[in-house]
Image (cartoon, rainbow, N blue to C red; front, top):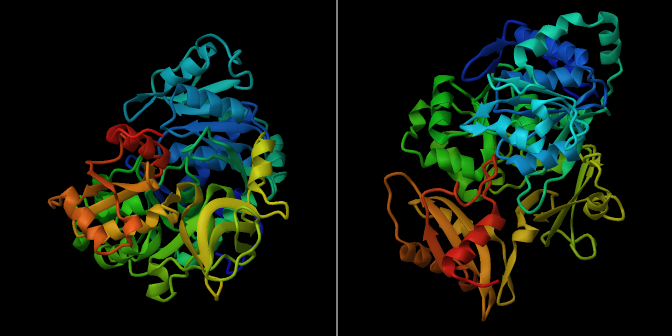
Length: 541
């Protein structure tokens, strides 16, 4: 693989990986193993079948299924002819699915009929009743075709096998010409934001955005063609597509993935497949390390990346054996990675998440009210400019006007600090910061204290209303398997280690956060957690 970045399209990145050896293993799922040669052949077949359906450069295709080989070959196939993939969140309900398909102008939708017990075709019927008669319909007038993996194929839909059979019907010269017209600046993906605070927005990312981001982050991580990279993230999340899938292919490594993340299954897969790299946010790592089946002796991990605080980073190194793990920060609008450590950075820098931006990516910390840059050591909003920044939100001029500063910087909505060397530390979400009697509290500050307790597996903190102080911290924690701790014990732990305004006024121990609200990428939805806390604690807004 190239030691310097050269603009390219996804088809060329896949070709370079094949050139390293077509018989090398490219992909391992729960049901299939593919070599790089087989992955390329299946991707070309998907591209030809898409072309036969009438999909052309700039058209949008939706994918609604778990992580599997079909997801990847559709994504690669669409890229080959210049189509844009719209990953659909597998946790969406019918109304959210309808919004996504309509907002994104999805022309063809690919879906599993069912996944994890969820009836996706039932949701689709609610979103567009015309799937049982004839497409396009009145509700989704751009949706002209639906392709289904599984038995429940609506009358206006097409079965997966029939879709693939159409690959042999196209004119080869027209297909080749279409592929040749794709450029690095063409959109590759429309990433819908997680929608934790409102209806999601469609982030447009180009081949150049995503592939350079995958290459740059992979270079810092130190990915090798011999690595086996376990992916914890769903492919409908840009960390799954860019920082796992594209990063692995960019270096000719083997990607190992499961349809969805479950800590026990992930640990088994890491051990059985002898994976050397993995990545994810703090919650995913905490869930694995607190699982009853966690056994460091069975792991073969060298490194990867994590978006986690110092307590969790320390445990990832010491307990999981990921000595070269890198701290990473990013967001969908930045493809997603903004800063990441080099795997050769000093351990203390990596543990404390002090990382440099990529070459050609610029970061400033600014006053969120005025956008005036702040000096080193000051906390403010992280703002970004450079090649990784999105083209914009699709069909959303109002949101685009808000997310960019007048001088062209991307407003992240995140709170951070730059040191004198230009290393960025992410502190928390600006919207999550709350004020306790005039003191600003970032939830991550309190969560770090709780995670220092031996029995705590995960911790989530929100601000809830208080008549005297305005807001006070409320903490929800899960405990490690086989360990015990009481609520008062954990509050006392915090009192001995944190300023009084940071000590949780309320603390509850829960089995998990699924019923409260999590995104598919393993993030607890703070908005829903706050609503839950206020109901449970009987607090008025």
